[in-house]
Amino acid sequence: MPSIWKTLIAGAAMLATATGAMAADWTPPGPIKLLIAFRAGGGADTQARLIAETLEDKLGWKFIPEQATGKGGLTMAAALKKAPADGTVVGMAVTETFGYNMAAAPNAGMKPSDFAGITTTAGFQMGVVSASSKGWKSIDDMIAAAKGGEPIRFGVMSPRLADIAYLLGKAQGVDFNIVSVQGGRAVLDGVNAGDLDVGFMAGIQRAGVAAGDLVNLASALSVPLEQTPDAPTLATLGVEFDSDGQFLFVGPAGMPQDAIDTMAKAIAETISDAESKPGGLIKKAFGGPVIIQGAELDAQLEAGFQSSEALLKAASE
Image (cartoon, rainbow, N blue to C red; front, side):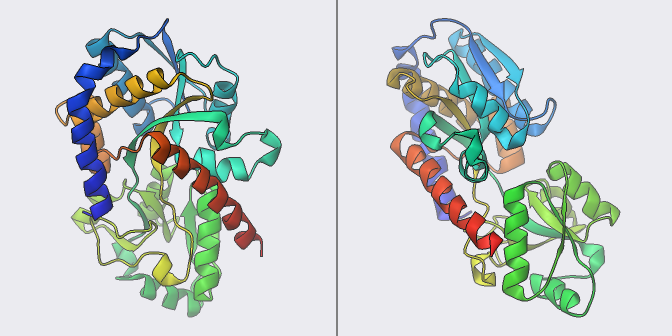
């Protein structure tokens, strides 16, 4: 496990010990509407609802989950920006929403400072993945196939990943046929069915890699993949951008600090308990919690926005 994740998970454990004492520092003035930027029934939606359910049981807070999907999380963000900043409306999305997706849609009129970061919950194990039946043992094999004239259908599930795939091909001197699909499950299904030759997968490939049916050809993170630490990172392949990101809870700008702190610590306690439903899900699906809060989270969201502007520029050249 990369040291950065060890540090963050250890931080989660320390936060958990403090949460019991801190949870009473703030009480919601009413039911909390939870805007979920993911389709109903998916893993992210389930994570959000299990966290809300557990906080209801432990703290007596009332949550009203509501789907607010579309535009890479911007639909949710637009609704959240206009919501009361008293802790009664929060949202769950991914950091990409507040980075690339906002940078790519300047007409939406949103930026990270319009929101109050509460806490991240889990990260992604984003890999460049192919089926083992392709016969590729490494990213070099795939690039050699492309240079030999084989068309490579590269599945992506967001515009940001499409740009990264384009820059990977550019750095390696090949052209990919980049295919956009709806979600990581669609990439997995496409690779398994042979409709895609390779694609980005954010942890959903774990079981297939373990079974030998899939191969992590490269890490799309700034660090090696936990499951396949020898797979090269994008940086070693000539791409200066990565797909680092996390699920996170956010509120509108101006949300009271005591509300942010209490909610952040309560969520940290919940997801750090591997015996809880959300903690068990996060451990199984994402390898454990990744908790970033406070000034560090705000700085990360702003940095993600700035780096996304650079990514958009690089991909347009």
